Image 1 (cartoon, one colour):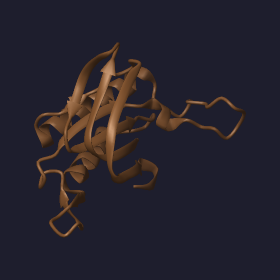
Image 2 (tube, rainbow, N blue to C red):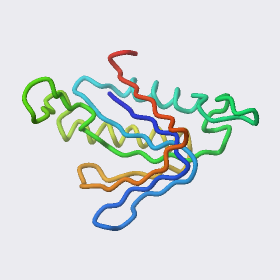
Image 3 (cartoon, helix red, strand yellow):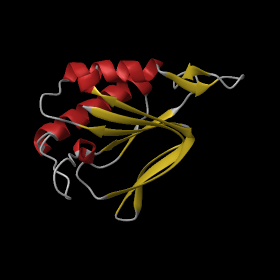
Length: 148
């Protein structure tokens, strides 16, 4: 599993020109699923997301979590996080989870986020999405389950 965490001032996702998810200050989470990922991994990631201190306090230090600042969450599936560009000029996506499995894990991830954060906005699995954001910082973190 790979997650790109972007601390944003605002973010939105559109499908066919229609906004289907929009947040203010919070996390834009891009989620890539691989074969072998588990629900236990999702549980661990979401728990850590709720306590990760990447928001600034009054002194400008990253001492506050998303729950401390009342932040919002936008989750977007992105299988391209598993692009392998080692050979040739066209990325290979063989390491990405099969669509049915990836969608199941994406839905579970979304449900755990709702359980943890309350309201969660989402993209549409498998759709051609347009994502707009204002990255705050910029502050972007890449989590890879192989490193956990």
